[in-house]
Image (cartoon, rainbow, N blue to C red):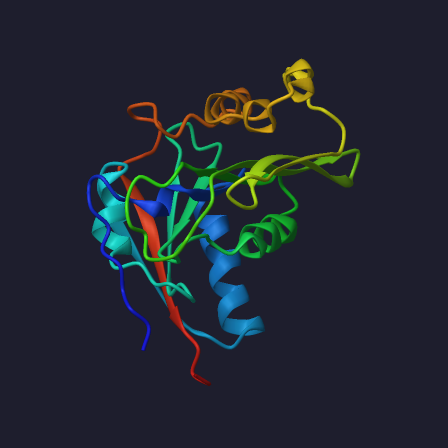
Length: 219
């Protein structure tokens, strides 16, 4: 049986991997629920929720599930430019979900990975990682930018650098000898701010959102 993990103030892996879609909340909710209901055959419910970030993730995404998520929390930014997506799946959310919904809307979308070095017993070994996976459009053509510095084992780190650099990037960082230092948490969030996403800034998210809950009737 799958063991649930409880989110606490000091332990909140829902923030390790996040998704953002550059659209309005209503469009993202409709596209996401229609995909789950009509394409995948899931039983889906959605409800309006309220609360401040990040407390709202603890309130509505507890407990975490190790294999399959069954909750998606959508939070609109205060400027209504982006919608953040958070799930109760541990250790990482499904990247393909944000990519599919963003592609259906045909708008910029991204996944951000910021997994810190383990500071406690996660029961599952997860390695430190920083990644930005950004899809955007130029003259109707969908493009992808990937930057990642990820630990693969106790001694090995890999660096990925795919696609055209974005105008705000400091590409000199990618030449550093230490792979870990080529793409840090500070650099990741600096790039996200350049895209208009400052998720930890007070008031960045509205104090409302939508909780999508779903189940597979075949399981």
